[in-house]
Image 1 (cartoon, protein in one colour):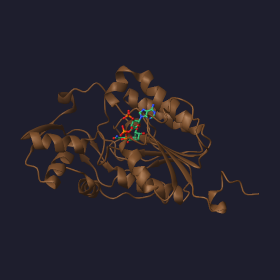
Image 2 (image 1 turned 135 degrees about the vertical axis):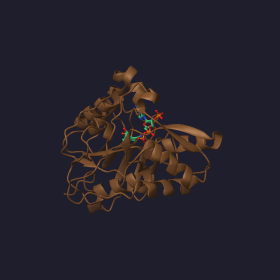
Image 3 (image 1 turned 180 degrees about the horizontal axis):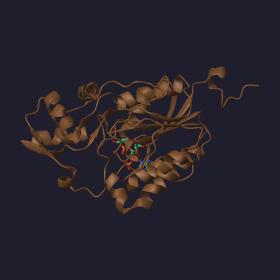
Image 4 (image 1 turned 180 degrees about the vertical axis):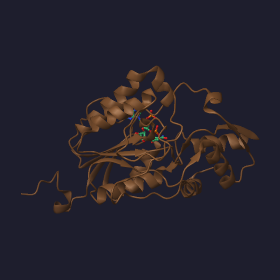
Length: 278
Ligand SMILES: NC(=O)c1ccc[n+]([C@@H]2O[C@H](COP(=O)([O-])OP(=O)(O)OC[C@H]3O[C@@H](n4cnc5c(N)ncnc54)[C@H](OP(=O)(O)O)[C@@H]3O)[C@@H](O)[C@H]2O)c1
């Protein structure tokens, strides 16, 4: 007998995909990448993931909801844990296949080389710790996708902030001693779809843009690509003085066979600017 819930292909029914945090930048990109499926995209107002799920059964959960305020998590680690750990446990309890998103901030950035999946995590911040515990809460049957420095055409992100500042000012001060791989949410969403559709083995996957740079390099590239005349003054993390410590160099690479590959961050930037309404 075919189980309609677990075997949508055999019945010809479209896969039902639940997206959490659907109002966020990754949530929106996932809704586009999975548009061929029967998508149930729930914003925070529609499902606060800190509460148990009470909706219809689904085949796949793409868990993009998270407490992403890295500095705010330092002063309210329990609030961050309620969403990033408790919320992830609630998505695992839905009982469907699960993709849970995590972060380069589970690493301390001292390795001196790119991080692969088998490297031991050692988060520096409350946010990083909650995300690491969230990975465990997702369970062994989940795909745990770690990515880094997300940006897209909507929401709060570095690209949008720089575009605003670049219009207003002649110069901006940007940190030049943190290195990572800025990842376009559209590319991450496509790679996530590949992971699921190819039914690659469950567990941790590093999916981040090709290439790496500092925040200051990224700001200069944004101004260049957007045609804005704004200088970048390169400063240190210490000069910026944020509450949460960040890894100095957290570049994610995959050591796993058949890992989906993402385009270079600069290509992501160009694509983002082409769809951004400015
Ligand atoms: N942003 C990055 O640079 C980055 C880097 C690496 C990994 N990640 C991970 O990637 C995933 C997506 O991040 P993102 O950049 O798309 O973040 P985002 O734009 O901040 O979106 C997160 C969404 O989650 C929602 N949310 C917060 N608390 C919730 C709750 N209790 N219940 C339901 N929804 C809730 C937020 O709603 P409100 O806006 O109303 O709070 C927001 O719409 C997260 O797991 C994040 O940790 C992000």
